[in-house]
Image (cartoon, rainbow, N blue to C red; front, side, top):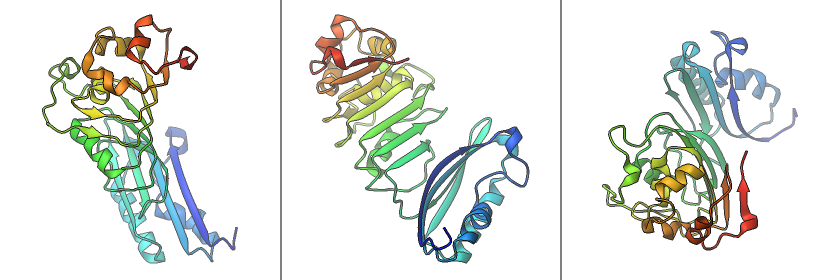
Length: 265
């Protein structure tokens, strides 16, 4: 690989107590320089998206930011950026080159950086704090060609009341995901089922695959009688749930075929 001229790297890394110490916290600029780039003297194009998750007590994100920025300033590759998002118990660190040249992005959170891309088609989002309507507006604006969207968040959008009960949209702005065909909200609170399926909040004209918790779906749709969610269910042909369906599901999802109902384990 010593004669390699172009390199594209998209990785997510988890670290643990056993694999990390004070001097080896993240995949930062020093790691990239000493472990990869030093062995590629002819490398002139390096596109990357590197995501490292570490336990909070090991995080030293000032060092990380300084390191990654300094390394790439010195070696004069394309524009780069980095940021750290801290949870209660861990930190997620992002390092990436600009512009983004990847179709798949993982571990996006509420605080995802301004990395707009018109080639991202697969997005994997997770967080442990509420994701508001405005967050999903920003996702739509940032990734206009999004086709596959996976969301994990068990924290309700509101900690005061159940938003999923109401058809009202306080922002008065309907989000249209023009290219979205697959949605995974199996591990999401009921509020996010309403966020995506309520026609007063979101329009999904091409959604054909839905992965969702059946009991929550039944609750949010009021036993599959809620009219304000029918439009976004109209074209769904593949439903992935964790239990067998009632006959009312097929009336609510008119494009659904029995053989396309998948029981997820």
